[in-house]
Length: 71
Image (cartoon, rainbow, N blue to C red; front, side, top):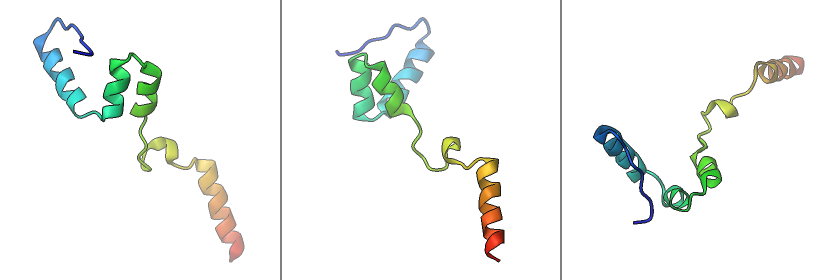
């Protein structure tokens, strides 16, 4: 046993266990070694549709202006 967590509610324990089962081996290792900084990094969304990758209104406006200036 590498990691344990106590819960007051069995439903929470089951939910947490099911959630961890879906994690990558890297995330499980970070949790086991109490490396919460690494766990945070590994938990960040890397999907290109994530909001942090979406252009700002200023960037969109600038791009549209550049396109209009080409015409």
